Length: 271
Image (cartoon, rainbow, N blue to C red):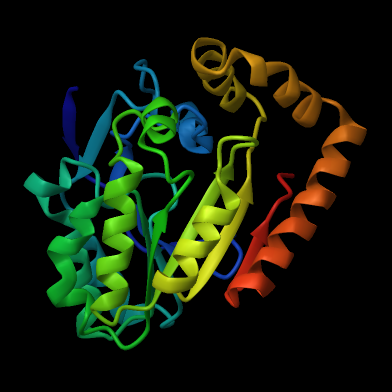
């Protein structure tokens, strides 16, 4: 994969995501190549010809830009990140996320992190110094086979579970991001059981099949779980079935939250 080194004009960007005031994206693109990723829409703005998951731009000046923005900005929650993973493999070399955290720490800026990588543990020394922080690991399944199929270049499920456990043991406020939920493949009960011991909250997101997001999911199902393909099409492409699916899913998730005594946040609609 070719990695370009670029410059950016802004670092702290106002966000429309629920519960999040700003986003900080140290990179353009992502190296994890998740087949369902909604962020592939970014190609409309970046001009990349490569497939999503096969390009990455490192924003080399983002820390300098952030230094100028922070003194003028209102101290509200910042998410790392929204359209990339802040701990892509290239972060081992560039350390952009770590340097961003160092700047945010100077202001005790409230932050949230969402990643699929065990590399986040590298920055435990910084994370433990924040007074207002939540670190989330995306857990789509507890099966390495499932995560390898849908998130081919991300850390396997087993590594993510171990990372979430370690963060929680170190006293970091953690959340389990169960998204997207893959019918018949996302083991809801197992994830809730694990999260109840190693996370403060569990966030649940349904599969977004809009636009090009569906194509990769369909290809994986055809190759690995062909018997599930008709069910997915019925669930996600029949309006009434989809409505019923979301209703039942919400009920099941809330019941699991009560059973395992863990706070649940739902993100089930994709407008």
